[in-house]
Amino acid sequence: MTTGLTTSGTTTPEPSGSSRRPAGRWYAGGAVLAAAAGAGVGHLVAGFVSPEASPVLAVGSTVIDLTPTPVKEWAVATFGTADKPILIGSVAIGALAVAGMIGVVARTRRSVGLALLGALALTSALAATLRPTSIAVDLIPGFVTALVGVATASWFFGLLDRWGATAVDPAAGAGADDTARGDGSSGRRHVLAAAAGLGALAATAGSLGQALSRSGSPSTVTLPPAAEPLAPLPRGLEETVRGISAFRTPNKEFYRIDTALVIPRVSVEGWKLTIDGEVDRPYTVTFDDLLAMPLVERDITLTCVSNEVGGPYIGGARWLGVRTRDLLERAGVRTGADQILSHSTEGMTISTPVQALTDDREALVAVAMNGEPLPARHGFPARLVTPGLYGFVGATKWLTRMEATTYAAKRAYWTERDWATDAPVLTQSRIDTPRGLNRLDAGRVVIGGVAWAQQRGIAKVEVRVDGERWQDAQLGPDAGIDYWRQWFLPWDALPGRHDLTVRATDLNGDVQPEGRTAPFPEGARGWHSIVVIID
Ligand SMILES: Nc1nc2c(c(=O)[nH]1)N[C@H]1C(S)=C(S)[C@@H](COP(=O)(O)O)O[C@H]1N2
Ligand SMILES: [Mo]
Image (cartoon, rainbow, N blue to C red; front, side, top):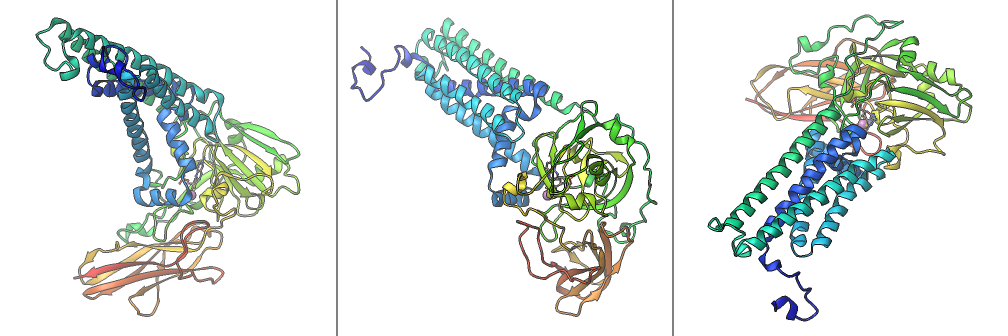
């Protein structure tokens, strides 16, 4: 009689022979490897059916969707663009840790453990279907993960059990020094080989899946020239003022903000843009149809509403695209519709006033950025660019549908998360050089930066050193009211600690307000101020 069978009902009797099983850590390790193998194969399958539905990514995306806005803001502010790798890493480590604990359970309660492991994997299928963008096939990677995870775990646990049964005292030493016993040592070798196999399966399947979801499109498209080309952008101040933002932001340095954990890889062949909803003549165009429409060039500065005063989420580019006005006129937006709800291939929804997409500002469905097809991360093959509005209400990437509707009838992704419904870009200015807290030598220092007030234009930029009077900065070249202005002011710096502050005035004569507001819900206000130390 084992003690397990003689104890009272409060303890569940262990299955016979359980005391001869290897220690719990072997089961924990096996469960971790099985979970990794499951996730790896799930990731590979997702590469074929739906990259977004990869188990870890699906959970990560759902975490993003469910995260309260202030926490999201904090994550962007703290981790910048590293926020996504950090999130993916945390989800993966968390899931593997849970799998490890389940492994310990599975040592004595096999079916409970396997069921828990399956449930863990199925949360990723659940997460994938909870996404606003989900499609039926999104269930597949999670199910495959569960299937492979449970099957390999059950197989591996079986090896452990058998090893335990054949070794003389595996529970004590987990078979550590049973080399003298033929059975025990071959059991141990079996187990280690199986573990290595599971690890290899996880790594190979995972990296194949990664390669698959990366492969896709851009590069191959050739774009026709603009029907209305612009003169080349004037030379910017960056050639003379060191440290100032380039007048035109190179694509590689352009900020990226979106909720996509994997950059959608959209192939032009399959891509379509549909214009429907409250319109008289709904229609759908292919990429070639779009390129056959008159293409115009526009210099537009794009800004994120989450940009803090002095922050980096802004860039200026020359966009090539079709006027949204032309596209919407062809469909005939009905009176009464006040919102265009744009949809992206990965399910984002962004609301833009019909007014902003049909008036003289000439918003675009852009296909090129700075002379190249849109990079995948910036919305290939087509995106919305609306001058004067923050990106979250006018710059839908991976655009695939523009639905005419009303603000009363439909709410967009960010609106549901309490951001402003309509958000014109606020006048702002930023000191790029010197950098805050820099130490500099006394003498001539050039203070420089950028200022923007899309749709209104910059009239004046002023700089204040400590408590002195405001001095007018010199403005750089002008590329229109929708584009930022560079500015600079030479300064004879004396030793000591100095506060430098900048403020801009728009062409309406409105001075940028001093009082700070947080980016949420409609953009940050306030003057950018830095401290420099002069030696
Ligand atoms: N599909 C999609 N489009 C999107 C977003 C997104 O999350 N998904 N984010 C928007 C936001 S908040 C901004 S600021 C701009 C940023 O564009 P960029 O990444 O090209 O700079 O894209 C907008 N378009
Ligand atoms: Mo944004």
